[in-house]
Image 1 (cartoon, protein in one colour):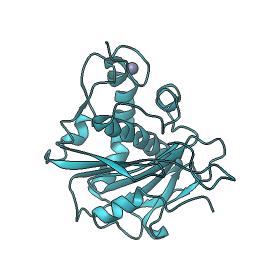
Image 2: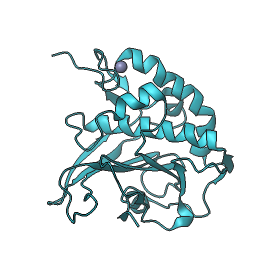
Image 3: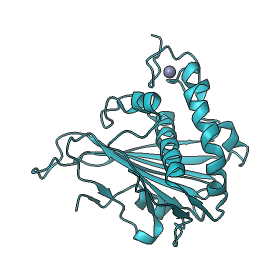
Image 4: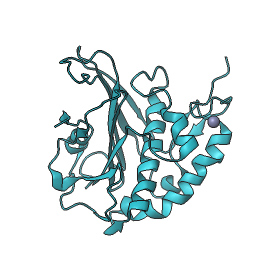
Length: 248
Ligand SMILES: [Zn+2]
């Protein structure tokens, strides 16, 4: 059976790199672990992928997407991302935050596909096509910016949770309907969360507020990087991927 591209449903014949070449040039391709877990109210289950992240490929993205809009997104994002990856002090305008947030969603989806290209019931069905068509994070997505000191795994970490969020008025989740994730590449750390619920309470990171900055939805203010407090290692990255609260 020919595999279809997750972004456009065109035929996906080739393996495409999950991470762009411009990033691979900045680091040695050391073996790292990707952690993916399912929290649906029953016993949490996990999958682990171990490998060289800059060599990792994805079989469900077509060449036209990879060489077209995804390449354009990389080219537009790389000049903004490089100082962040290096841990240099800088500021991000709201337009730059939009760019980084869009890139963060694309990169999270690609890293997820490295080890998990089966079902995607926790993602809204139009998550992939939205990104391709509008070049902007899906409406229910939240993205936070943080900085990683690199005392744990280096040069990258990836944590992903498929989760169940209880609808308003209910006490238990009824389905896998949400995702939350955090990844670091160099000193750039990003946290993401989104749910399929029509009225989803916003997620709030469980880390101290001086470690992260909300970047999407846009607030319109220029933000400084790095935030006052930097995430040290793997425990903090895992916490960034686990919002403590969905709602108030
Ligand atoms: Zn495609």
